[in-house]
Image 1 (cartoon, rainbow, N blue to C red):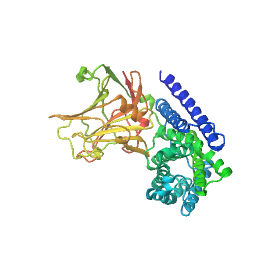
Image 2 (image 1 turned 180 degrees about the vertical axis):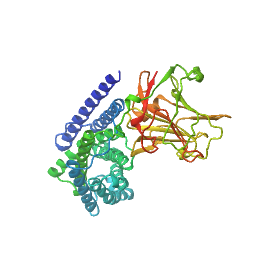
Image 3 (image 1 turned 30 degrees about the vertical axis):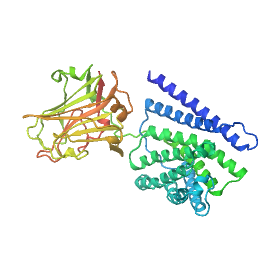
Image 4 (image 1 turned 45 degrees about the vertical axis):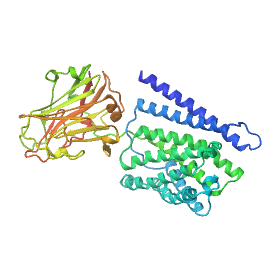
Length: 475
C-alpha cells in the first residue's frame, strides 16, 4: 500500500513539475515578445505556474516522508560543489558592490517610497553577509560547521530582502511573471539555505533538505536562467543581472550538493550488530489502552549490569503494548525505595539521578533516547551521533505519568502513531519491526550503576550504542 502511494506521489510530482516548467517557459516567451503577446491574461497563468510548482513540492515531500531517508552528513565540498559555491559567493559580492551605486528601477512602489529604499539598501548590505557564506561552506570542514551555520543567517536575510523588495505593489507583480517568479525563487532559496544551515548547526532533516532543494531548483531555473539570457540580449540594470546570475549559480550549487548527498553513505555508528545475542520483545496488541492489564503484560528484564562498579542491582523491568488508540505505550519500573530525583527541568541531565531509559530506533542508526527520573522529568533527544536535537524540534513531547510507591517507582508514557512517524520516518503498525533498549542508571547516585536489557559490550559505560539495540516487534 505504501509503495503504491509512493508511486502516486512521485508521478504527481513529475506531472506538476513538467506543467509548471512548460507554463513558465511560455510566460517567458510572452515576456520576450513585446509586440506579439501569446497571452493577454498573464496574472492567472503566473499564479497557476506558482501553484503547480508548490503542489509538486508538496507531493515530493509526501513521497520523501513515505519512502524515508537514511541520515547522511553533508559530504566534504569538492568538484562542482566547490566551484559553484565559490562562484555564487563572488556573484553575490558583485551584487553588493553594484547595489551601493545602482538602485533596481523595477517597481514604482519600490523606488518612490522610503520603505522601498530601505529594502534596496538592505538587499545590498545583506549581500555582504551572504557572499562569505557560499565561499565559506565551499571550504568548511566539520570542525568549522558552527561558523558556517551562523554565516547562513546572513544568506537567509539576503533572500528575505530580495523577496520583500518585489512585492510592494501586488497588482504590478501579478501582471509581470518575471516579478512573481523572481520572488518565489528568492523565497525558495531562503528555505533551501535554512535547511542547509540545519545541517551545519547539527539538526539535519533529510527529507526537508531534499524537498526545499527541489523547490529552489524548480523556481531557480524557471526564473534565473531565462532572466540571465533576457538581460544579456535585451539589456537590464547591472545589479538585477548579477543577482540573477547569483541565483542561477546557487541553483547549480544546490544541484551539486543534492547529487553529492545522494552518493554519500548513511551515517553508521557501531558496526557490531550482535545479532546472535539480540534480545527480542513483542509489544502485545490491544484495541484500546483502557483494556490493558499490566499484570498480564510480558516484562523485559533490565538485569544485565555492566562495567563492575559495585553490587547494586535493583530489580528493574520494562513493559510495552501497542494499542489502536494510543500507539506504543511503555511502562518502566524500578524497585528502589528512595530514588535520587533532583532534576526538574526538561532536558536536564536526569541520568545523574536514579534514571530509567528507553532508546528507540527504526534502523539502528538514528535513534531517540527517552530518559526519566522519579519525578517524571525527561531528557529526550532525536537523531544520530553528531546530529541530535531535543524532541521539540521534531514532534511533541510525550505525556509522562510518574508514580512513586513505598518499594518502587514507575514511569508510563505513550508514543502516538504521529510521534513515531515524526522521529523515525516509519509507520507504526502491526507487524512493524523496530529496535531499542531499556536501561537503568544513576551516575551520581550513592551507588553508581548501569543496567541493560540488551547488553552493551563497550569498554566504558555508554548507552548511546544503536548497534547493540535489541529487536522490538509490534504485535
